[in-house]
Image (cartoon, rainbow, N blue to C red):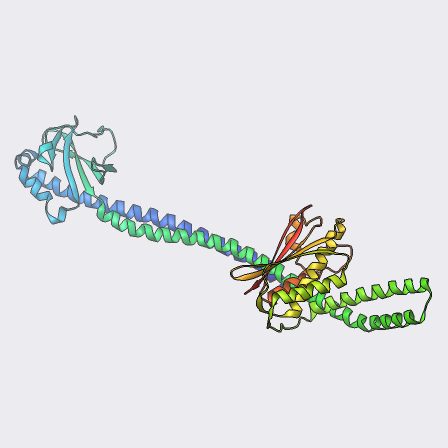
Length: 420
């Protein structure tokens, strides 16, 4: 039965995703709703202003008559120029034929209105109109009964004051909308992060268990192996028989291999702090090459070292462990492909030195490259799969960068970049 904490761990990512998505939906819905409400409120405000103008004009027409106002053209124009009517773009009254009976621009009186509508539509009505100067106007129309005929009163208002308010409102709407999208994104990223963290924690726990097992194995096997090795070497000295010596040499070889595996385990479970010192990389590589040739005299090691003075600050022992490990891997890969060649080189760059090691093996499939640094992952029949993990960890300790390039049937090349 999973514990309460385990249940929380399972459901926490989904809870976070759900809350984030709900918050995102809320903000987006609020943004759309607020914009619609603001737009509706502003339209209502314009309509009320137009109705105010309508009431004033109807009162004037009732008191003075339409004919008198038409005669006093300047009076009507001056009325519209007042501060309280500054939002009015124009006012027009037209009859059923579309003839303009009264207009705030006296020059248009008697002409035909361009966009008249049938008197069968429902009044009052309002709409937006774009002028020849590309200005957008709010237009309000309602029926008007004059002394002689039925007419339509049109009031057109400038909307720039409203547009300014709407502009501020749009900024808030956009903010809410992007907040909604942000919560959507946060939910997805958070869900991915929780899941990734969960896998990472599980991996760390697995590694800790492996480390514990490795420590126990190393401790329990160290003394028996030392005894086997010691007795085998002693018997070898005292037994001249060739058959017996072959068997003993095989035992000794396997014992040494197991001893090396234990050393690898120890390096993984008990990493030592680096001991940094200044040294010449060229001389250091010469020593590494000599060591490798002693270990593998049959290897065709081809060396390219450019220059002779490469001063670096690093840990010689750890760097040597990295290079010997990589050279051994390269040698084994080339051998498996029926080749004896391994290339090693040193290149000087502006900010770092590059040590490259290339094998001529079968290469590594692209889908396996991300996994080769993982502990206990190996494609070999022998080995524990800790070599490259230790190399990666050592490179991080020494502030070196390690890069690997591989193509099937073309071999593998590893670059170690050492800071200058």
